[in-house]
Image 1 (cartoon, rainbow, N blue to C red):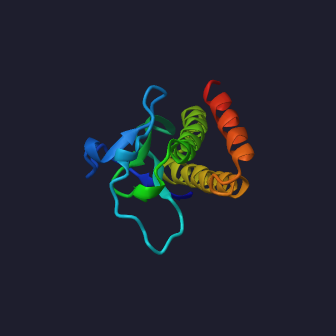
Image 2: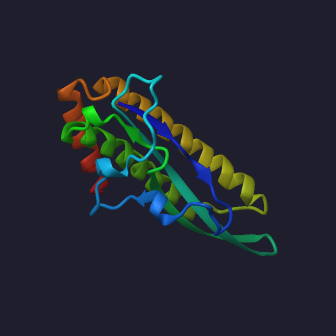
Image 3: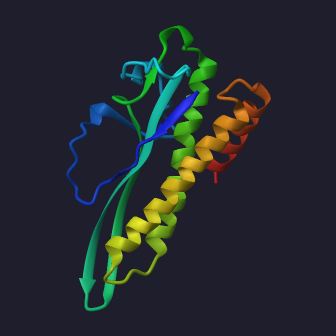
Length: 172
């Protein structure tokens, strides 16, 4: 399996994406093969590619040197950029793709926790962007590690180990 991280910085409440174009992460809803709407990339040898990322917006209130920032964050699966090869769509492969989505959700939670507990200066825009970039890099590294260790789902023992680890972390 191959992944792609799409991270979009939303600084206002407006976005060109329709809610029909993405799935927000939920413990009650898992991705399905029907959500992979993009045309498969024939230059890639992988069975599927999940486009996942953290989307966020914030509102800052400045009172002198005091800056209060409120955040809204969402982990999203982009249907229009995610693809799969029909002949390779199995429940096992779909679980592998779900873990990519779940990893992104875990990192979003950590990002949100830090973002909401940080004391910002009037340079809050840059501070938030730097923080976001740190977590975006972390997502990329963890996604790579996941694919390397599981052999893009080929190593069933490692795949099961990652599934257990991520599910345990999501319960925290």
